[in-house]
Structure formats: C-alpha cells, structure tokens
Image 1 (tube, rainbow, N blue to C red):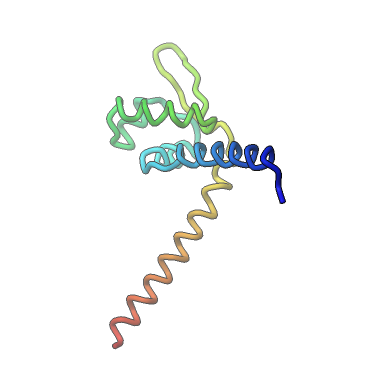
Image 2: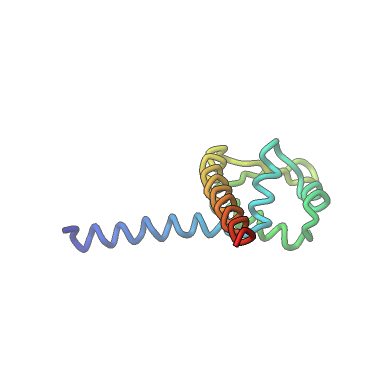
Length: 116
C-alpha cells in the first residue's frame, strides 16, 4: 500500500498531466498545432489561414508556449511560431484513432437502427 508521500507525489504528477492535456483542450489550439505541423508560421499567417482573431490567437499561442508545445522567435516585426517537440503528434495520433473507432461504432449503430 503506497504511503502518503507516494500519494502526494502521484497527485502532483496527475495535476501536471492534467494541466498539459488541458492546454490541448480547445479546437483552436489543436488547429494551431496541426497548422504548424508542416513548419513555422507568423501570427499574421495563422490569423488569415485559420480565421481566428488575433487577440484570441495570441492567448492560445501563449497557453501552448507555456505548456512547452510551441516555440517562438522574433524576426524584425514578425513573431514566428513552431512546434517545439514533434512528439506532440505521437500523443495526438492515438486520440484520432480512438475517435475514428467511435465514429465507426456510431455508424454501425445508426445503420442497424435503419434495419428495424
């Protein structure tokens, strides 16, 4: 049976994991990560291509940077963002696969409803 010290340490680890996952838990943030999969981009490019207002995008970028998912660099007046650690896609891939399975299950259930 784990001692109180181990439980407290586990709780800290769970909190860190939850905070990291929370940083991913927004459609705009996932869109940014996916957008940057092919390389770095400026805030202006992302505003235009992702159709997100600059103020909102800036907040999402700050959250992703704080979580260690994105890196940024400034060149003259432009700030460029990139994915700091490509392993984030290793995290996102199984989630996409789970969602595909759920979709297939839902499609099968809906198709069986039409047969009754």
